[in-house]
Image (cartoon, rainbow, N blue to C red; front, side, top):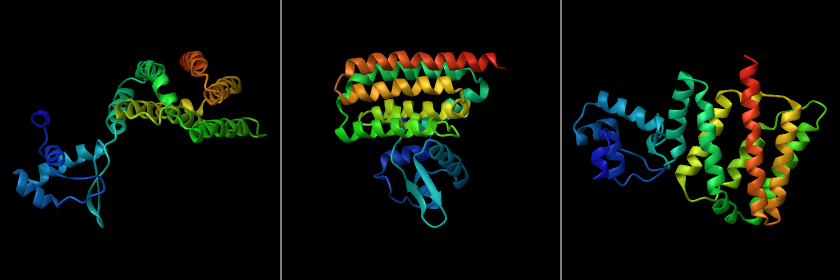
Length: 227
C-alpha cells in the first residue's frame, strides 16, 4: 500500500478519508483521538501538510482541505536548496528548459484560440512597459507567458515544477535585472513565439523557444560576473 510509505499520521488521515478540496476537517482533538497521537504531534504534522499546500487553517473556518498542487512541494524543496547554495538555481533552470522543450508539442496542441490571443496580449503588455518613458520590467508577463503555454497540460507534476521555477527566479532576484538589451531580446523572442503558435507553426515556435532559453545562461554569467 502506498499509504504505508507516508510517515505521517495526519497525511495518512488526509488521503484515506474523503477529504475533498474545500471541505472542512474535524478538529485537532477529534483527529487526534481517531489516529491515536497527541494533539501536539498532530499539530507538527499539520504544519508539514500546510507547507505542502494540502491544508489551511483559520479561526473562523477551521481546517480546510486544499486542491493538490505539486508546486508547493517543489517550491519548498527548491527554496531550501537555494538557501543552501544560490547556484542550485542553474541546475533547476536546466531541468525547466528540458521540461518545456520535452512537453512543448503536447502543450501547444492543447491551446485554444483564446489562449493564443492571451499570449499575444501578454506580449503587447510587455512591449508597452518596455517602451514606456520610464521603462518597467515586464516580469509578471514573462512568468505568465511561459506558464500559459503549458497551462492546458493535464500533468500536475510538470506544471508544478514549471511554476516553482518562477518562484526560484524571483528568489534569486533575476526579476529585478534591468539590462534593456536583454529584456528587448527576450521579448523579441516571445513575440515571434506567440506569432508562430498563433499561425500553427509549432515546430518554429519550439525552435525559437530553444534559442530563447540560451538567454538565461547569458544572464546567469552576467550576474555571477557582477559579484
